[in-house]
Image 1 (cartoon, helix red, strand yellow):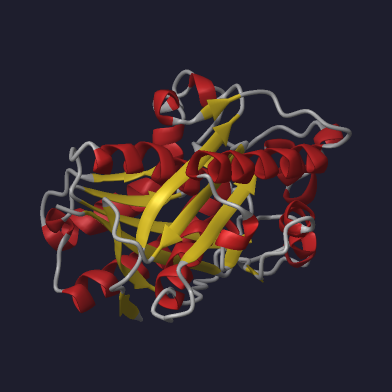
Image 2 (cartoon, rainbow, N blue to C red):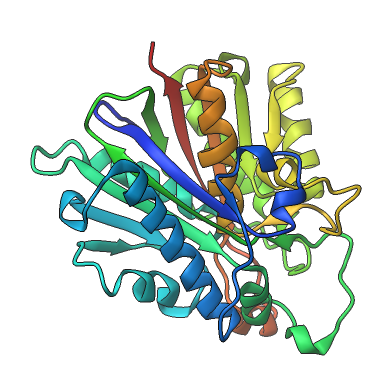
Length: 325
């Protein structure tokens, strides 16, 4: 289902990354690269997300009372990173879970809610931390298991954005809400190809309902499908629309998979959010891009379901951003 957005703009954003992200191809676009170390991996992610939000508020000279609503989520059980980050802020919160597609869902919901006259500023955020995600979703770090070639590397990134009804240079113009797609894929070491059908479902629905093709955009992004899932989507887009030369994946933009030890590319909610709110944002501000479509993807499972040999339900949400002339 596609929604047209009339009154939502990206005021600004703040993206923080760790050492490996600071060595990747788009590192110069990331706002801050640092080390995030606390008493645990989980507390480090909370600190990183807190710092991202605080830096954004400082840059925009915002107080908590200036923010009408916050929308965010990440990968932790019961969204504890989100709750612990906002527990000192008296901001109304919508906590969301959409795995690695969280940023598109958050931005889309913000765009729809800004149609209300009593909502003007919405904070949207997400994060991921390599070690806390590994501990929760993959074999325990201590297990020392070998990685499969199809696996991705969870990024350590926190990203926050202020979406406002005030006219700014970047507009959120439409939002396509995804469906849960499960084709019976059961390989938990290959999330990329598991998510590819969900990405295609949402992309094709978006193109159909908006009467567009990939060529109507300066950049079409998925995230994060791995090099394997990217190949599936790229082949299908080329089969349907002819030669498509403006499609890429956030997990492949964030890292140099040939020279960095990230296996099949980046993943985690921070990956799509980090690429969109740093690299894409600055390209739009510089008028190098005029229209961008991000279709962020997520696997909706937990380790219990994987251990019970269940298949992998997936989802993808698309958000369209335009440069305001």
